[in-house]
Amino acid sequence: MTLMADTLFGLIPAASTGQQWVARDLQLVNWGGYSGWHQVRFAATATLLSGASGSGKSTLLDAYIALLMPHTTPFNGASNGGVVGRPRGKDQRNVISYSRGKVDESRTAEGTRETVLRGDGTDTWSAIAMTWADQAGSLFTALRAWYVPADAQRTEDLVAVRATVDGAFDARDLEAAAGRRLARGALADLGLTLHDTDRDFTARLHSTLGIGAAGGGAKAVALLGRIQAGQQITTVDALYKSMVLEEPETLAVADAAVAHFDDLAGTRTRMLVAKDQVRVLSPIRKHRAAVDAARERLAVIAEVGTFDDAASPASLWRHERRLGLLRSAEEDVRRRAREAKADVASLQAAHETQAAALDGLRQALWAAGGERAAKAEAQAEAA
Image (cartoon, rainbow, N blue to C red; front, top):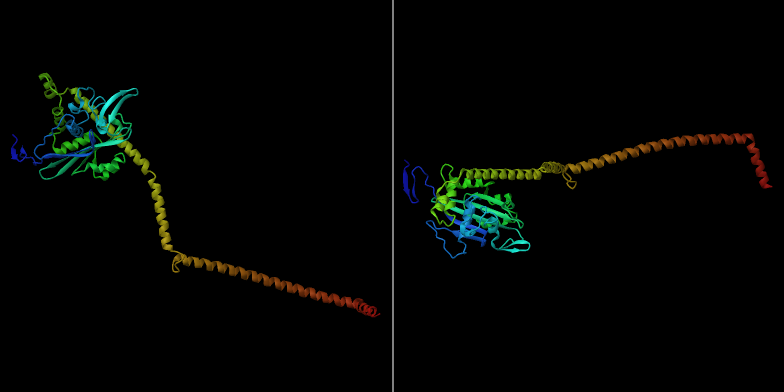
C-alpha cells in the first residue's frame, strides 16, 4: 500500500519529493489570429477562458496541443469542424495554416486560393512556448517554433525547432534567429537546449514535468488529447469507442513506425549537419598552417627589429652588409691599382728599351754618313 501525504497540492506519495509543476504562462508568436507576440498568464489555482465563437479559444487550445502532443494528435474539433483526413493534414488545420493565419480559402481557375494574415508569398515563422513553475519557484520552459518558407506546402518543408530551457524564456528573443531561418547556432546562442526528434523532446517534457509513471507519459498525454479533443459524442457507443476502449495493436505498431521514422529523420538531419560541418571546417587546417607561418614570421620580424632602430639586429645587419660591400669594393680598387702599376712599369720598361734602340739607330745613322748629309743640307740651305 502506498502511503500518501496531504500537501498544499493535494495527496501525493509520501516518498515523493513533492515537486509539482503548474503552468505559469503561454506565449504565442504568429499563431492563427494571434499576430505578433502574445502572452497568456495563468492563475496558480485555476483559469477559465471564455469568449464568443471565433474569439480564439480553440486556437489557444490547439497551441497547447501543438506544443505538448505528437503530430498524430488532431487539433481541437472546433477548429476543424466536420472535415476529415489525416490529423493535421492538408484537409485539417495544421501548423502551416496556423503559422500563416489562414482566414479563408476559395476556388479559382489556378486552384485553391488561401486568404492568410501573413506569409502570402513571403516567408514567415511561428512559435509556441509554455513556462511551468513548481512550489519552490523553479521554472521550466518548453518551446516549439517553425520557419515557414513562402513555397511550403507540407510540414516536411518547414524548419522545425524543439527546445527546452531550465528557466523562463521570452519568445520575442527568437526574432533575430528567425532572420537566420532559425539556424541551430542562433538558437544555441539564446541558451536553448535543442532536441532533434519529437521523441527526445517529449521524453524531456515527461521526465521533467513528471507526466506518466514508468515511461507512461505518452499514454497519459494521449488520454489528455482525447479528453481535450472537443468532439461531440452523441451515443454511448461513440463514448466507449473514443474514451474507454483501448486502441488496436496496429495503431501502436504504426506509432512505433512513425517514431522510428522520426529517429531516421533525426539521424539524417544529424548526418547532413555533420556533412556541412566537414565541408565548412575542412579548409581550417590550411588556414591554421597559414596563421602559424604568419605568426612565426612576425616573431622573427619582432626579434630582428627595424632598420630605424640603430641597436636592432636588422640595423646591425645592414651596417655589416654595407661594410662588407665597401671592403669588397676597396679590395677591387686595390687589385685594379696593382694591375695598373704593373702595366705602367711594363710600359716604362718598354719605353726605355725603345728609347735606347732609338739612340742606337741615331748613332749608327750618324756614323754611316749622316754627319756629311747634315753638313750638305746646311750648305744647300745657305746657298
